[in-house]
Image (tube, rainbow, N blue to C red):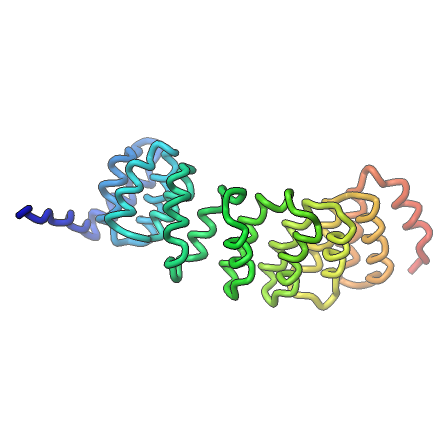
Length: 264
């Protein structure tokens, strides 16, 4: 009968403090990936463990032979999720997908770690993340969608994102606007334009104005001019002027439109 091998003893508080100090001297005194893999299971401090997982992942795809055994022995944990997401090895993606359905409170972290493989993730996973009630899952879903969005029609993209533009959390709406500003289709511009409301969630109207400015097409400039006419003498007027002033390609047309506006 084989003799069970005892798990390595956890590091003491003083040992973890010394290890944290060593991590702080990384450039002068780095730990090897092998040392990180040996020490990580012995660390109880969650912040230190997360930093070690990040460093282990930063060792690159070659670190997968150290990370996967830890996944088998230690199970799902935030430090290993971080290591898998950063190392960019195909087997890391497979491990994250295996964990996804039973990740519990760490589901958003698993989705976020999968972001760099967005083009390889089943669309149903992305759709489920975008429809999830939790803010973190929705934001992670947007991260996954970033890699697929350029291959979607504008109608398909709006089908996925318009519910998020109506989210009650400004962080979700702003992240959605940042994604949509990569496109130039009229229906997407219209969806962005609808978010420019004086009583919208904090920062949302300003982000929508910035998104139209970043798009920088004749239509986006027309929408900004139309909003300026509606929102003169409001808190959003300065933000609109700032974006219009940045439109170098359409400067002459914009100046003509501004001159035609009635004086205050």
